[in-house]
Length: 286
Length: 286
Image 1 (cartoon, each protein chain N blue to C red):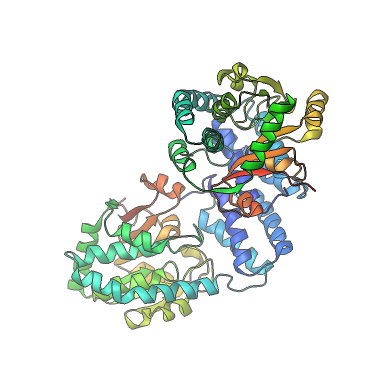
Image 2: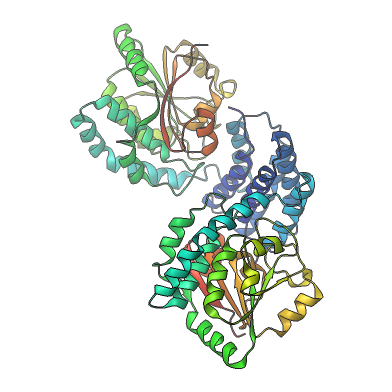
């Protein structure tokens, strides 16, 4: 997805947020702000939002000398989600359509996104996600693809998004009862899940946790490791969580199912839905 | 009030909004965005938010060659408010405490602020304003000052804020039944009321409408006309509407009563209230 002009104010706010999460003082925040203004001014506007985000957050991490500004909020988000896991399992187990409920919960967990809004309301989002109509609904195609995976004894490549959201993914993966490879980031960026975050969330108990080898938002394939690119090339079913994966991966690959909450108005407009919509979107057969 | 770092993303959004309200195309919007980034980078950070806003909106007006990008939305806002005027008068007339109700309505009208958020909800704001507790409540001091004005046969200098909000001011001024000088901007900036906007709202029927002589947000005194500065110096009671007047006028002048809705989180923090609070704040006796 291309970068829209409305993304720029958001990047500026993200840079300030990141500096603050890293504990930067007022003076250091000012330096971050001014450097971000200069970076945004100098950037090639044809780059995707996650590529710009990558550059800005890398700059902030270097300026505030913090490897992982979001470490504490990621840990807290994962702990909060783990508290909900027994309830999630029970809700899925008792549902008329357990897969539908598990998908809705996995999308609801996508609200835990410090790039979009650090003041998210998780409980309200879950409540709403269990009942609201799905904005783009390719779930029947996803069901078909999952059934084929079962018959063919192949596996699912599941591209993680944020720490905490991981636990919602875990509840879905537990229900699937398929071989799943769960791909997390190769290093900290925003509140995206790294290996440590996935382990805290217990993903290793339900999936093979692998690293993309990249520490960029989303999945910028040429920035990932050769091993991950092989994995991606050979996958037959890919579940890609969150806005940044939607922004970076090809929309023309029908192996990919994008699961996300269209939180940002710019992404919602790009998808043709209202902000806040739940999305289960298959890459289109080109 | 000083400029906070959180103001910068907001200025960037305002510049884009202004370009769009002026009908600028995508390419022209891109130029506006890039020039605004450069301006924000080069600005002296000790200037107040309305001074920065002044510079940015002046730049946008020049770039998009529009004298008044907000002309159409100002006209529509004034028309919408005029439709409410009979209801406002009746609500004030029937209230247990008409002055309290008129003040609450005048503050509710302050939501019509395209600098803060073009997607404001006027009806919800009015409903809430009639019942919510007032965040900073110097209304008894304002009542005292109004009573003195009546006894001394002096007048009220009323500093307007936005087009449309003017009609809510009119309902309050009608109730006061005092001599009022209503000061509007000397030229278009954001959706602030100019002479044309005040006349559309019928303010000339209840007050002497004068120009500050300046086309900056708020009241930056050294930018106003000598005639207005004389008026300001001689005033015994000044009602200053909106955030920008609070940001620009001296907080140490006890002739001034700031009436505003603290919409912006930065201003709310500066005032020590929750965002959305209603404010009736007298300048403190230094």
